[in-house]
Length: 440
Ligand code: GDP
Ligand code: MG
Image 1 (cartoon, rainbow, N blue to C red):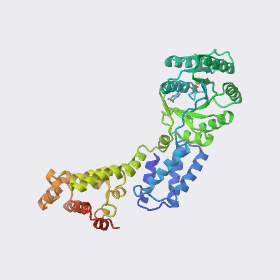
Image 2: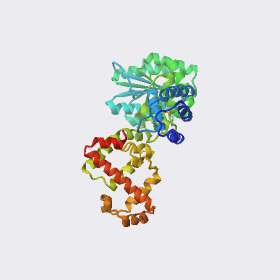
Image 3: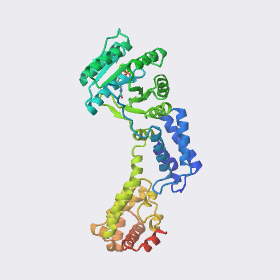
Image 4: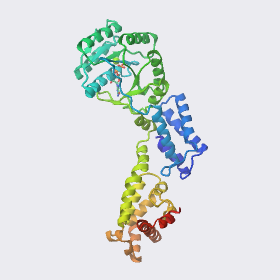
């Protein structure tokens, strides 16, 4: 994914205080590629890059992040923003029924999504919806809707394939009035591409039905084409929202970004499967992660920012206060921080470690950590708790037990003792000593 690519390309920038223009230019090349790969529209990508670049150039790199992580964070935040930041729910009519009109190209998932929405509404608010079958061009379409109606125990209004769709809708709405249905979902016909005849029919249905919601159903797998489809439907019908289907495949979801940017209309739901329960409220932040292919990256960054600072530091402080920080904790700490990313960045987050000479030159790559662990694991429980026991003969034993050279064992024990001393000084409230240690 993009995040890995950025991290790899920019690992060399680690430790810089500010992100420069040329750093950003290089990073933006990666971002652009990732967005285009995710099928984000070209113009949308261009504008997006511009926004991110302006924000990223000159921004201070947070202590806890690498420049690449910082840029990923900005990209993620801007992606979320451009997709609307917040989930947007369905509007409700002032008086029943709330009419929802499903529109879109053939095969986009209108009929299926109508069924999913009915299920969703019943679950959310014990709604009593009516489905109207206004796709008269494909005989199977009515049957498909009836099957869905049966599955959900919801009535389907239909007049076969010979009637005029506008009349069907008019009559169906009358039935809904009489039966006091609180929601009406109109399943309309689609075409393989936008044509005038279809748009004309949909406009007339809109006029008759006065829908509260016109939901455009778009197949996310159609990639770039999805943008043009959305633009066309929105121009003709002034849609109120979008259902983005088939996100259960391996599509990156770039369509969400393009559609929102081009139409200004919110994505309200996503379809994530063929079954009727495979409908989710659209969350811009989750989609941003998906587009970036970041996996756990944001979680990691947030962890680095919050969790670590708070929980880990609190635990460490407690150990320091109780003066029970031992080799086990030492390895624990190192292991915890190793999970979070580049070692030298993370080490700085350990309280008092930022400028600790004992660790500053320690090149903490994962290999080194493995070696440190090997040494600690060669210790007896008593030795782990009390490093003073580690006389020369025990150290020799550790060296052969761990397969590490004796000088390395000695160096590691020295580092540990320095850390312990520092902690003792800190807990005695000797803040001068602490400041000295931290080089402030
Ligand atoms: P319509 O022509 O717009 O009414 O489209 P349909 O509702 O008939 O759906 C077309 C095909 O797409 C059907 O085979 C559906 O099962 C499938 N489909 C619809 N939504 C989804 C989705 O979110 N995920 C997957 N995997 N398939 C979907
Ligand atoms: Mg259909």
